[in-house]
Length: 191
Image 1: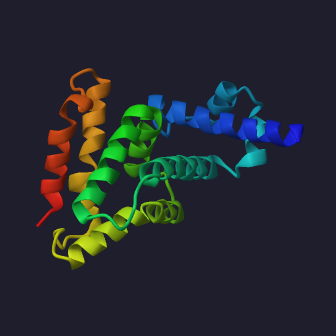
Image 2: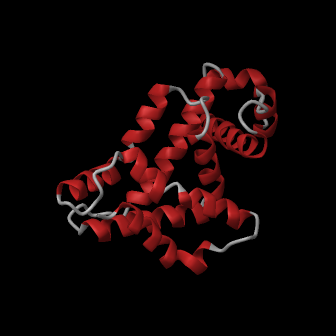
């Protein structure tokens, strides 16, 4: 049992180091040797858990995406109204971004890089299924604009990344503007 926990701890340390380095240096400047050093393991240890850097990044992405969606959809109930459901999900995303900013920044970088392979991206999208189902129901009911999910996401969810960056730089406090930010997001997708 102690060996299993030690193994889990090493893998988690590698994931944490990857997130830290990618957030600070970007994907391409994040070398396996640096990851190993920060995780306090030998470089060879990485290959006990991951095939290569691509596998490490993809698995880190999916681990973080799981944490993100577990948090976001924890209190969601698909039987509430479209607007109330979207508000709950949107505000949980905003809360996650504020509380877990290192994960939020990592996911933002993943969304803007070719480093994540297509199968991992598709798996990541599956994590968003409750939101996609809500939008599908909203489109069918004539409440949500009949646009692609990518456009709906770009105009209602992605602006949170911009606001989080402004907050990180000390130019903005999302909590002071949460209601107006939500209204803007809702107005961008409602019919």
